Image 1 (tube, rainbow, N blue to C red):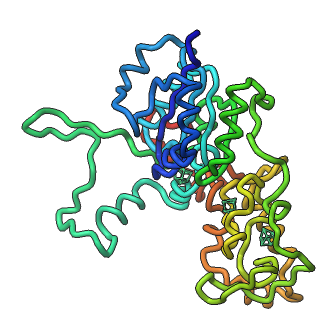
Image 2 (image 1 turned 45 degrees about the vertical axis):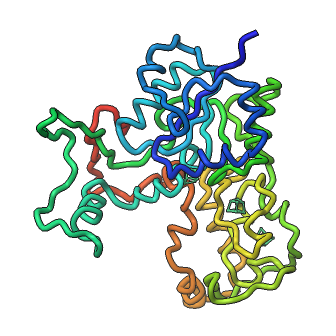
Image 3 (image 1 turned 180 degrees about the vertical axis):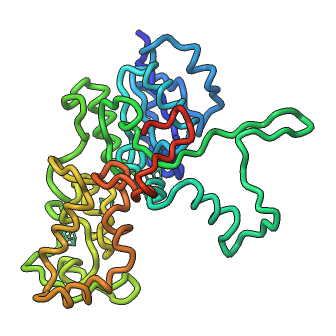
Length: 331
Ligand code: SF4
Ligand code: SF4
Ligand code: SF4
């Protein structure tokens, strides 16, 4: 009997989700035994034409990681959607936009100006920036159009399941793979993972939280028993989906929120902000400001993994102007 076909793809991704699949260690052999891997450009030499030549729906499961940042990412999202029966947004970038999505605090022009002209390490006296088409002796070279707004996978094509994490922990991947192999998948549209929060998985002792100030990780050595938030370390575990085994708090680091919002939450950052606001030990707006002054980059702390799929989505555009440069980029 032929095996189900599996595809893995990275769009705007750091590659960590690909490494996470390899962190299954010897269980990767079970994946190889259970599936025919028909597309995995990070690991084997596949061409886009190989996918284009497939029948629609020929791929049984596609694990798609990375956000949608440019025309090429979108093209592959549409192509793999068409060719796959089940499309999984794999990891925080595909699910919520994650770190690439923090670029939504700027637009394409601001990003290009900084990266190619203004950053302290850039030497570019002629102000050269990448062009969509360049003619060289060997012929015409093309680059995909870089979008103004980073999108999640679900903002571009319909998604069947979401596997959170930056990257998803091996245990989460195993649960997802087992569910796929045995056909015991949750209802379409579900996030594959527990419905409780990281706090529920965290073994640190919890008591009433009253925060007088925040500390950066390098500023204190937290004790091994008490809740890190109660010790003044920012911890997003109060509003983040469980599934990682409270990995970061278990080694003295506050959760950064990579498993995203827990069940029923629309805006991860807003939920986190509400949770943190409720534990500030302040009686006046001035005292609130003083405490928040000890938390650098609040937008990055609250929206690190889910800005593109939040209610904010991106920084407001000048005069409400829509900066769309490619027919492939949805509004
Ligand atoms: S979710 Fe994290 S590990 Fe995966 S591609 Fe995005 S940044 Fe990298
Ligand atoms: S350390 Fe973080 S995850 Fe653990 S109980 Fe405190 S807030 Fe929750
Ligand atoms: S503790 Fe938080 S940041 Fe760390 S792996 Fe778990 S969800 Fe991600």
